[in-house]
Length: 297
Image 1 (cartoon, one colour):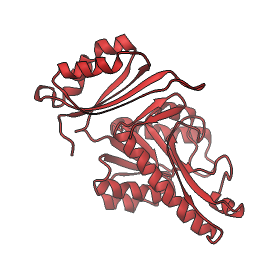
Image 2 (tube, rainbow, N blue to C red):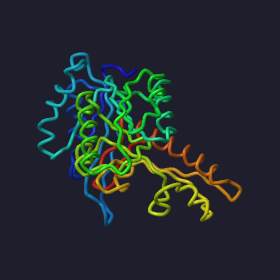
Image 3 (spheres, one colour):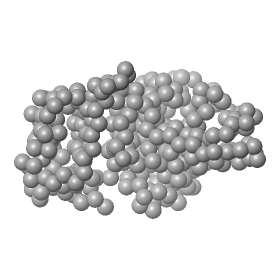
Image 4 (spheres, one colour):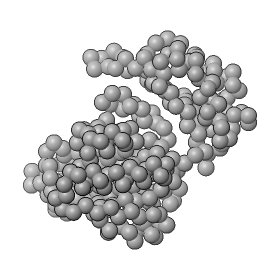
């Protein structure tokens, strides 16, 4: 468990001189000790955004620890925020981010995240599990986590889907959820729902896209003799499976593997990639940079 004295500052703004000096100077004046600092300027290429990004992990003195510390520290940065046009947030590491997990019928990613949470590998609080199927109610009960079965009939209308999404939105607000994780939740989300979850929802899918769409993608891949199985974790946007990428990985396969073998390999990669993306997000290591992300290790 992190100390109530530990915080992470994340910021982005137009790249210019004096940003690091100003930020470190303010922390020094407040009696803070910088434990780790990373920065990146997106400049110099044709698709550069011209933005500067920073993640700073620091320890605050006693008078800035406690529940009111983020607000006090935020006030400390008011002038610098205005001066540099910063989008800056201060996060207390003593507070565990609250997660809502969404799943349909494939539970490998869900089960992996729940194990990592229970074993202390993922420093979060799981607020609940939502599913359009009842299959994982027992798994949720085994972990002592609330299970919300919000069914959708096959071929449900857009109105019915939106009504179900509003139930999820109400749950997110009621439970003060920080991050929604689509752990193989096999429903297309509406533009309104994506806007509601902007920057705080992560999805996982195989990396064959745009090839091998639809049902049984690993079987389709087997039929084409693929040699690499991959997965992509990204933020959810209204552009299906095209949100800013957080993490990707691959595993090599060969002709000796059956379609079911490929599926098993793919599910392992999906689980690991999603877990990394979730961990980096809750550790405040991921900053949005237009259609891309900056991920500080």
